[in-house]
Structure formats: C-alpha cells, structure tokens
Amino acid sequence: MTLDLPRDLPAALTDRTAAWRLIADLAAFWNAPLRPGDGRTDAELDAAEARLGLRLPAALREAHLLLGNRPDLTSNHDTLLPPAELYVDQDCLVHRVENQGCAYWGIPLAALGQDDPPTVAWPDAADPETTPWTARLSVDCLAVVLTEPLLDQDAYTDAGDVDPADLADWTELPRLHEPGVDSRFYARPDALLLVQDGSWLAMRAVSEAALDELCEKLPVSWNAY
Image 1: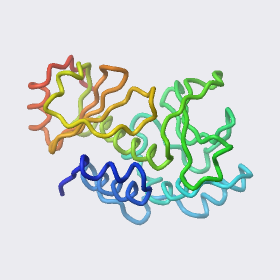
Image 2: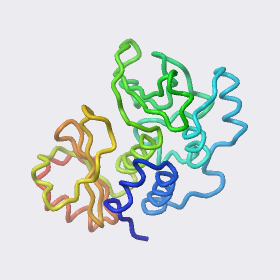
Image 3: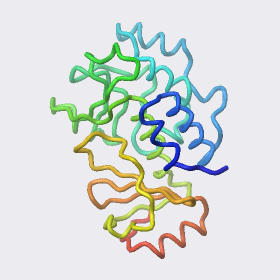
C-alpha cells in the first residue's frame, strides 16, 4: 500500500475519526493491518474506570479499543499504559510513560469530561510542572504511532544526529505537538523520520536497500541500534 502523510495528516489533527483512520493506515504500511483482538476490551476499560473512580475520555477508550494490544505500534520505546495500569498523578490521568521513567504523559483531570482532551507531559514523578503536549489526545496517539515504529530494532531503522538544514529534499509534516515541544516529522515515499531536540534523528525505511541508500546520502552521525 501507499501512504501519503502530507495529504492525510492535516485532517487527522482536527478530526479524531480521521486520526484513527490514519493510524490504521500506518499500522498496515509499517507492520500489519489492525485486526479484531488488537485492541483492549470494553470490560477492561470499564474495570479501569471502576478502579480509578472516573470516566475515561471517549478518545482514550477508542484508542485502546483500536490498538491497545499492538505494542509494535505503541511500546517499542515508551509505553502506552494498558487499562489496568492507568493511574492518577500530578492532577492528571497518566496514560503513557517513558521507558526509564524519565518522562510521563497524561490528561489533566479537569479536562477528562472532554471527548478528545488535551495532553501534557512532565519530566519525572517528583516534578509537578507540566508542559502542554498535544491539543488532542487523538493527536498524541497519532504521534505515538508515528514515532514508535521508528524505534523498532527489528525493522529497517537507524538513529543518529542531523542538522535539519540537511533535510531539504524531505517533506516536513505539520506539527503535531504544542509550541515549545521540539519534535518534527519528515516524510518521503520510502521513509519517515523524526527529529527531536534540534538534532536527534530516528528513521525508518520501507526496505533494507532504501535504508542503506538514505544512510549513505544523509550527512548524519549514525548510531546504529
């Protein structure tokens, strides 16, 4: 199949139905189509609500029902928490954690009544200062599914450091994150890459040949997995 992120991403940033559709396209493009059983169950989500004493936003339920059992899309590096591990901290419902506990992502409790609430992030459990992350939870889920396949060590991936000025022949995609979050995606028909913190790059290509060609062409200090 083909994937046209410059065409399809803008709609997905404002319409969560379009976001779920694009997530399904990404799953099929990089790994395998979403199938029954790839999501969590309503019973699991209902149990989480009963344990926490709160209602989960519609977008969080929909995301878990769609792909909550697909760690290849959600948990190669950081972890989308399963319903049984959702918890409250910093006046937020924590839904994702960094793999070494160096960052946390959550939904402000005050926003839980929204169908598709905003998300925030903070650097560690002892730091109460949160930073706006995405305008919508569905956009955060989309960012997860764009990012985590790039960090699959069993796929055609690599990482390193790059000057974004050297990406002139790549298409920069619309920003998913709130101002202040230094995270940018760039696309080609045969590859996708993410640049964070000004220079750190993660890339995935559609084939070994495409990856080798890009690694030779890009002026990157590669840090092979």
